[in-house]
Image 1 (cartoon, helix red, strand yellow):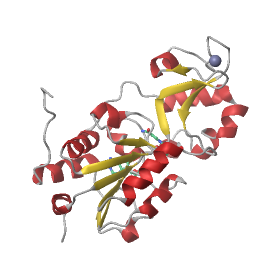
Image 2 (image 1 turned 180 degrees about the horizontal axis):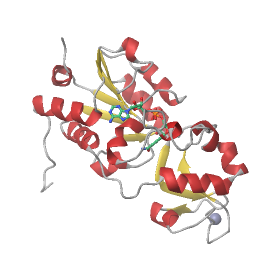
Image 3 (image 1 turned 120 degrees about the vertical axis):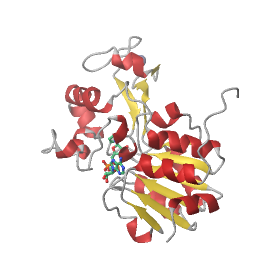
Length: 250
Ligand code: NAD
Ligand code: ZN
């Protein structure tokens, strides 16, 4: 039987496609996993309702209350999964990292080849004058945040349901996936479109799925791992001799 270690050792161009499950070990709940946000406090609502484009404009106060409480985790640190993916990029094997996550943890872990197809909480813009605001600025506001220059509402640069993903990131994501020989899909229910459709661009040899629950990609996978993403990636990278620390003097 093939293992993730064998696959990584043979691979030349690895692409990664991940979701909220990559960040659960950093203390950020996913949406649809067994401990997911919409299976607990918000069981009567769906993410498609409260995080939608129309809800943002109809009930901005409720939107921002939810957003600050559940989507902003400035204290979160990269976990073993993020660190293993940063090591895989340093090894030269990882050529593109596509994430649906908005938490910025892949960049914090040191990855550079990141395509954040649903944007990031680190960027916010005034809807009227387009002025940029940081996450720190957002954290200091209360209620619906307004631009100090023009009074316009400041919206996080994250893709809400009913909005199109960042076209630049989507194009890059599809290009990296179509050029890869190995694709690792991890921590995602693949329930969100058009993000999940990126996978149809994969024509490589090995499709690896690492997810605690079944996913629609399982049928096509050459390897399915049902355990924790961080544990699976870190142990495979160590066995393959690909887990090197960053060069301190670079
Ligand atoms: P999802 O909640 O629909 O699915 C997450 C999947 O990951 C589940 O199947 C769960 O079983 C699995 N999982 C959770 N922890 C795991 C672990 N440690 N090891 C292995 N598997 C694990 O997530 P989604 O498909 O990404 O869709 C949710 C949407 O909302 C996406 O756009 C997502 O980015 C966004 N979101 C982002 C964050 C974040 O930025 N961290 C958090 C919640 C939701
Ligand atoms: Zn403004």
